[in-house]
Amino acid sequence: MVSNGDEESGNQVQQSKNSCSPFLRYNSPLVQVILIGVVCFCCPGMFNALSGMGGGGQLNHTASNNSLTALYTTFSIFGILGGAIYNILGPHLTLLAGCSTYVLYTSSLLYYNHHHHQAFAILSGALLGVGAGLLWAAQGAIITSYPPTNRKGISFVDDV
Image (tube, rainbow, N blue to C red; front, side, top):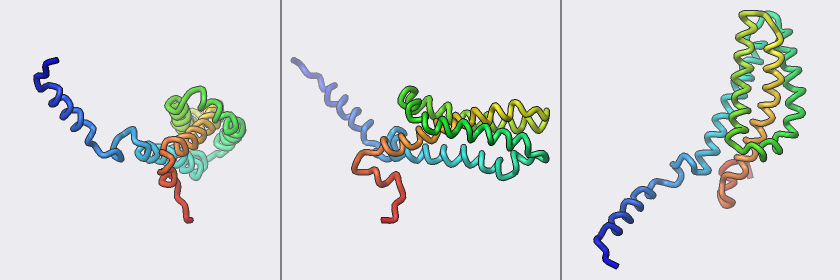
């Protein structure tokens, strides 16, 4: 077999592509855990801010209270079923479904500000309960399964 030198230059190009730091890759376990931390900080943080203002600053808290009742009812069910749904859908779809319900809940409170119909707020509260169960199931699975065995402690804060 005759070699014209292309094999050596091909190997050098391949090595330069792989010389990136393993901690700065988008698909590295540490970056994935940080991204999940940001998502789980922002989505429930937005929900807590809206709940702390009494349903987004509503003068009448009835719609917010009814939507929270629906939320915690469905969250108690889907908090248990979230792991099984995560096994079926996988991490991407489970996180997408979980995070999108927080946006729906926020928009329902805005809708209630303008139209004063509780049905959308209550329905979105129930859907947020489903989404919250999925989000926290996916978060727990990702945080514990992505890091390699020798680096699992970096994902958690321990005072040991």
